[in-house]
Image 1 (cartoon, one colour):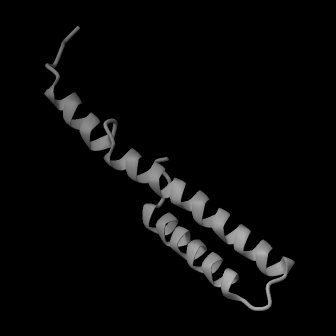
Image 2 (cartoon, one colour; image 1 turned 135 degrees about the vertical axis):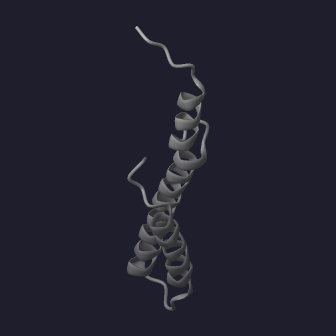
Amino acid sequence: PDKIDVNTSASLSVTGYIWSLYATLITPQNTGSRVLAIINFCMGSVNGYNAYRGWSYQHGPLSQKKLEEQLQDLPNSTT
């Protein structure tokens, strides 16, 4: 999740949903336009999930910034 670019995944998600909507508006409807709609919907869903994963990794309870802050708050121990 740390290598996921949230902006790119979100953009691809929106693009997939827009093109899947457009594929349903094509007339006449045939198998190719339906497959195009399904593939674009899947692309939007997968990239939407990746955007969520990236965002939750960056802003979630175990984000890198929060871990660094917690490590700084720990007392230094010398052994």
